[in-house]
Image (cartoon, rainbow, N blue to C red; front, top):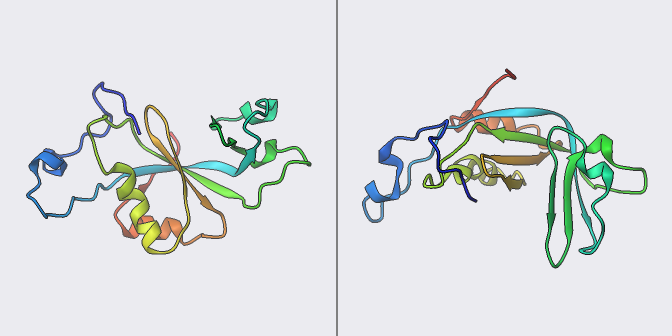
Length: 156
């Protein structure tokens, strides 16, 4: 997960860096702000040599990743044509970044309470920030995140 080198929007205290931690001391967990992007999202897998479909590129948030094994697409659920199936509907949470490349444990701080509560996630990192998708049927996720000290903020 790469982050831009410019001054980050979120400046974490120096005490949270690995260099300032004593051996054996657990890392501090970041308290993050995040937004809930509107609408439902889909995650689909296509053949590795498939062309990127037009429907995959529409919307405020999409992610298209090609590897030797697959073409993964994350996009608004409403974009999917009838012949393309996604087994789950997902909510998409955007962490408020950007974060500096040197900041460690940002994504871990956000997803650890979800993992502890058996809430599955699909994470995507961009140059500026991270996005975490959660199946809609895990409605308790937002409460879990708040209890862990993270803050859901309203749209600007």
